[in-house]
Image (cartoon, rainbow, N blue to C red; front, side, top):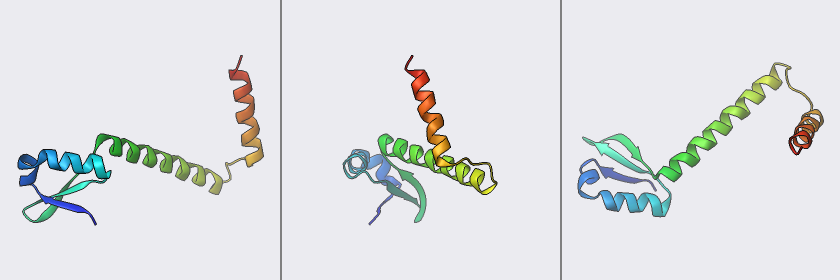
Length: 90
């Protein structure tokens, strides 16, 4: 169940909101005049979310390349990675 708070809590209960975000690893949704306005989360949680989104973008790009016929077989890709790793160990 999402944690929903009025905007006035940002001033009067900041520490409580911060503790919740860090302890639960979940965002707090802030309302303004009874409507959703902001999502507040711990920086670590935000960074994790941003990294996941970046990975999803790469997966989408790869899927688009495969769909357009620009992909290469997995075995060839793995061979390229192995070769790059071998040369990097010099």
